[in-house]
Length: 196
Image 1: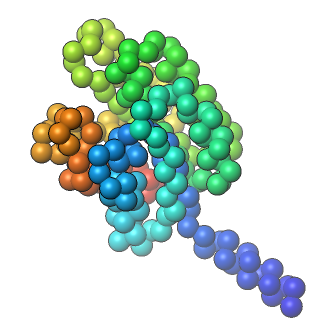
Image 2: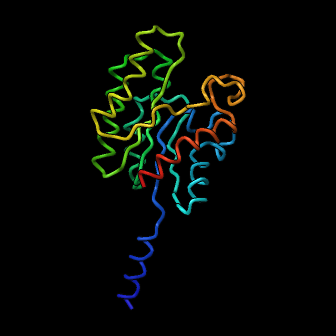
Image 3: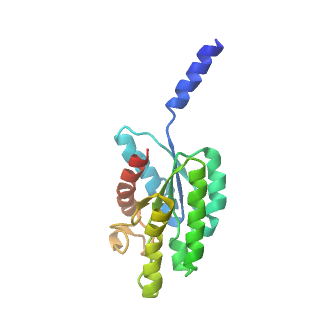
């Protein structure tokens, strides 16, 4: 009886859906829309159509900067994620936080996740051009540099085809609307699929 139960438990764990952790800010939390319609859940739906089941762990908080990455990641690691999409840094840039601080925060989060066997996808961010050209350029360059230094997968720009497009953002012109989140989900899904 005990052997049968053990085999059953092993079988069930083998077929458990992989867990994908989304660690981000308002862009990933779904600010301004129903959180259920934010891109992490839409990615789950896209992959489900391809026969791939995932469990979404969305640990994103509106207004958060990279400074909160480690504390939130430590908490989220209790759920034993298999993959993490790290989508932080946008608020750092908008607040003009020193780039070396942002980079160090992201690097520490990447290192911690990797040390626990979590595959990391780093989402590249960009900031509006009204900041100094040097800061804007260095901010954008930070993400490919982290990819190279830490050996993680880079999704070049989370808001590809959405940023600056009025029809895909809510009235503030910064946060994606439901249609915008659908586009982001299509951008993100192939990276999650490949990581799995």
